[in-house]
Every structure is written in structure tokens, then in C-alpha cells.
Image (cartoon, rainbow, N blue to C red; front, side, top):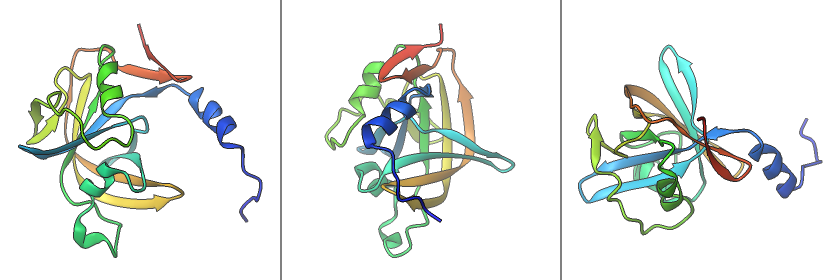
Length: 169
């Protein structure tokens, strides 16, 4: 049974903000047709098979780019490969650049490619995925990717805590 008592949004946001999270950029496409957005919800879902998940706001431009037009009536699938760049401690400017609902962004930061998908050069790690599943819940979609390739860089990761960027060092 669902509770009819919900925490006020500011209190809920403050409570969730007290949990440190990594900061990543999800990217997809190729050539001039590339898209990217900042996420703070990346987590591993399974080791066998290797699966990751992240969340995107319903109606976000990135979610529209990831979802195949033919899947409008069956939104459980995502259309094409994508990458996740785990940002390094000195890349907070990129987290800000790709955050929010703006659709016009400079994609010059996506100059590198891993496994044929654009990624952020100098990131702490890269994960490329093939689409696995999408599940809509509340005001967000849970996107699940089947991991096909990973690389770990040398940069320490960027972390967000209580509304501020932090580093582990």
C-alpha cells in the first residue's frame, strides 16, 4: 500500500544531497549527431551480466535521443549504443556545461571516442554500453545498459555532495 504522506520536495532534495555521488556524462551518437548530458545517478546493477543504470528526467532531450522513435508505444527499449564518462576532479566545468534542460551545447568536449562512441577526454573512467532496457517511474526513466567495454583513466573522480563539487583528495 502506498503512503499518502510524501516528504516535501526541498527536504527530500536536501536529504538526498547529503549522499555523495559521482558525476558522469552520458553521450551518444557520432559525427555531427552527438548528444550528451550530466548525470549523478550512475550505479552498477549486475556483474553477471555486467549492467549499469542511470536515471534521466522524463522529457529530457537526452532521453529522446536514446529512445528509438519506433519505441514510443513500447518505451521499454533504448535505441543505440551510448557511453558514460566518469568525470575527473578537474572537469566540474563540463558537469555544469552538460547539466540542465538546455539543448544547445558545445560538444567540443566529446573529442575522444571509445568503442565508437563519443566520450569526454581525460575522464576518470569510460563505460560503453548497448541498450538493455528502460523503465519509467515517477518523473524519471531508469535506463539500463549492457556494458560492452570499460577503461579506467588516471584522474581522480569528481564528486557532488550537498550541492557542491568535491574531490576525494
